Length: 587
Ligand code: ISL
Ligand code: CA
Image (cartoon, rainbow, N blue to C red; front, side, top):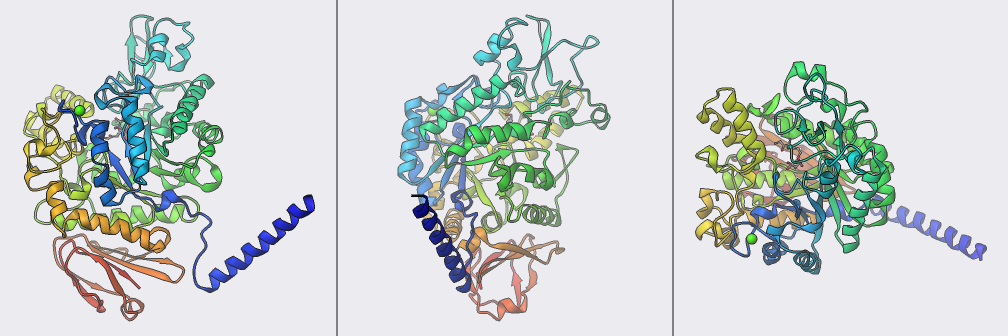
C-alpha cells in the first residue's frame, strides 16, 4: 500500500515538474499563489443607503436583492456588506448588540438567507463586516459586565478605577473626547476607542476570543464567503494601559501607540486563522489604520497564516496634515510613491487591496479627480488605476456611476456621529458654523453615505418615503438609469475594466514597472506576466500633456484595450494626452 502511494507521489512530482517546464517554455507563468480573491472585483454596499424596498427611508436587505441583477450586469464577483447585525445604530451598525441577528431596519434572517442564496445563484459572493474590537453598550455581554465588579462578564471589557479624579489614562477617542466613560453603577470607567456606545472588548480574555470564533463559524457555516475585519489591528492593548505623554504633547489622537498593532495581535490572528479561517475557502481583509508596508507584511505574508489583505490608510492621508480635518492639496507624486512602495513591499509575499474611497471617505472623483468639468473623464481615469494596478479592487457603491461629494447646506443635514461630534467640539472652541461647514463639505463621512442614485425620480429612486439622509441634489444628472442608457457612461467603462481583468491574467498578476516616476502629471506603468505586457498611461491633470512611449512599446504594435477618449489604436512614440485621459495598451 505504502509503495503504491509513494509511486503515485513520485509520478505526480515528475508530472508537475514536466508541466512547469513545458509551460515555462511556452512563455507562460505558473503562479502557485493564484487565488480567486486576487482575481475578484469587490463591490462595497452600505445597506442603509443602497435601496429602500419598503418606503421607511432606510435601505434594506430586500432592497439589495432587488438590485443583484444590476450588480451582475456590472460584473462584480464579491459584495462586501457594511454591518447588518442588530444594532442601536449609534455608529450605523458598527455598534453591534447581537451578532446573531439582523438589524430591524434591514430585515430578517430570512431576508439575509435569501440574499445569500440569490447572490450565490448569480455567482456573486458575500463578505460580511466583522466588528469585534468593540460591541454596542447594549450587547448582553456589556449589560452584564456593567452590573457589578464581580460579574462573570466584567473581564469581557476594560473596566478600570479612575486616577486623580479623572479617567484611568489620557487616551482619546477616534470620535473626539476621552476614550473612557465613567459608569456610576460600579464607580469605574470603561474603555471605548470609538463612541461611548462602543465599549472595547478585552481580547486578552480567552473567553472573548472563543465567543468571537464561535460567532464567525456560525456565519461561515451559513455559507458566507469571508470577512472585512473592522479595525482589527487595534484589538491588543499594551498591558497596564499606560498614559501616552508624547501623544498628548503632539495633539491629535492620543494613545494609539499602545494599541495599534499591539503586542499580541499576531498571536490572536494566527489563533483565529488556525481555529476558524483556515477551515474555509474564504477571503479576509483587515481594516488597519497605522500600518506601514513593513508592519503590513506581518499580517498578510503567505507563510504567516493571518489575513489575505489589508486596507491601509497611507494614500488616504496625502491630502491632510495632523488630522483628517486639516486639509491640504495632494500631489500625484505622493500617490505614486505610496502605491509603488506598497506594491514592492508585498510583491510575491502577500497581496494588496486597492481602494480610493469607502463609507468613511469623501467620494474619490471629488477628491482625486475633478467632479465638475471632467467628472466622467476623471472617474474613468481613477477606475483605470483601481483595476490595472496589482491588487484586488474595491468599488464603493455609486463610484461606478461617478457619484460625487454632496453640498451640505447646514449642520443639521449631517447624520454621522464623527461629524456631529466634530461640530460640537469646534463649536465649543468658538469656530463659526460657516467655517465648520466648509471643512465638513470636504471631509464628512456623510458624502459617501448619501443615497445611491438610481434614477431621476423623487429621492433619486432610492425610497418612496423620506430618506434618512439627504439625497445629493445632482441626482437628475448622475444616476444609474442614465448610465445604463449611455454606452459611454462611467458604468460601462467599469464593466469593461472588470471584463479585462477576467480576460487577461496580466491585469491581475502582472508585475508592475513604474515609468516617469517623478512626473507630476502622468501616472504610467507597465505590467508583465510571462510574455504578456500592458502599458497604462494616465494624465492626472486638467491640461494636455505630452507622453513619450518607451521605444520597445510603440514599435511592438500595441493594441488599445480601453481608453476614456476616442483614441487611435496605434501608439506613436509621442502622444498628447487630453485632460484626465487614460489609455491601456496590450503589447
Ligand atoms: O473614519 C475614519 C476617519 O474618518 C477613521 O478614523 C475610522 O474611524 C477608522 O478607520 C475605523 O473605521 C471603522 O471603524 C469605526 C467605524 O465608525 C467606521 O465606519 C469603520 O470603517 C468604528 O467601528
Ligand atoms: Ca427600508
